[in-house]
Length: 323
Image (cartoon, rainbow, N blue to C red; front, side, top):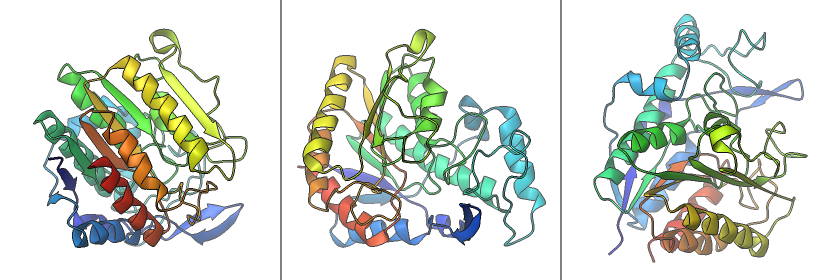
């Protein structure tokens, strides 16, 4: 019988970004605690898995993915701020953030590290022979590269988990199903033969705009190991499932020991940050396809900004995974 382990910490509620700058104007930040809380509540009501607290890890794990310059900048910037103060980047390069939607607050370093520990806890459980582990990470991680934050992301949770598993001698593939391209994950592994695949909104119109094209397929040892599948606005389940089938075929050819799925529900038709037309019932098929791939799988939460739509999608998704 397939069982889902779910890693969650209520301390993510302390991550309360208030604003972001969009088109030169302050708007309300979309990364709200409710988007994780509604998923948690839905999974509890439907008895979808066993909830566990994250384990502790030494902060040295941060350095497997991120530069010491970036880590110290984020720590020092966080510590320099007053309670409820939000810092937005002023000088790109000096400020280690590539957009204006990712504010730094007094507890940002602490909250991002907690999110990373949730992902690392999932990786440890997968090593202990669990079939499926779901990490309710917040803030998300897949836009953060080794030297910059952005896209609500500060530390790359999927990349850190991958390095944890690789360090133990295993082969890993990363599949990103968030609506937005995983520019941070791509950057980190671009010269590596660790397989990375992203299905996402086309960068000609979708964030982060700077990456996600088909021709970005890796360099040096990584040539051919980075695969982008950009899709058009209004993509529905037929086209999406064909793209997922293609991705899973590439993963089968690679034959990893473990699969990491960066999971975003901003692909839902009702999400305010995406432009795909996936409906709630579609996620059961998506989950079933991944579950039937047969790999021990670590699911790491990324985006999804309509709390109710994300919760309903998560329920259907994991019903499909566990079939």
